[in-house]
Length: 236
Image 1 (cartoon, one colour):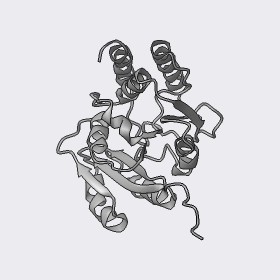
Image 2 (cartoon, rainbow, N blue to C red):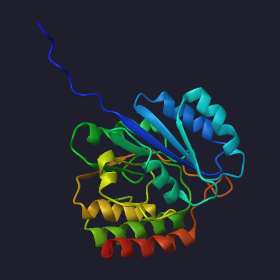
Image 3 (cartoon, helix red, strand yellow):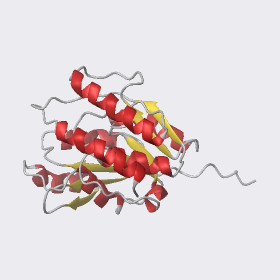
């Protein structure tokens, strides 16, 4: 008697935008490939100047990921846009190239997608996972941006600016990302909210960096995020 077919395998693209992450890129790749979930890994080198670009070809030979490169630095949003055109699997998860987000959380973030409950999942640094204690004013700024975004999208997210976002790949056929920098986060949030997709949040761990350790986002990005929240809520 023929065995009944099991559920189809869930396939996952891990998309890694990288800019000047010489000290962390090898370790984050080790952690990504230690996870059982990635089917495909896509790295976009956003014209790094610190030697990251020199490391990536050897790492590619070791792991076999797709490697795309920008000739000039354009920003995280632009790197993601390049990567979105290259991912091919059922689900996509964004993984920063630093060590702030841990691939051990993939099961938690991807779970609602695999179970068919969600179309988009946001990780959240504020739902109980362990996190490094750092900048108070960054926390205040994040809360303000998340609250403003929630007011205009009618969502109740706790962490709109989080880097861990996972979603069904076909959503990329329904939205066009225009932001080049960190304002990708509010733009993506506004556009998936407009589509009335099923959005979940899950707790994640967070090991934030100091500026001395390579953190890049600053107050100018917060100002741009405010404009992006308003722009992408009211204008297509």
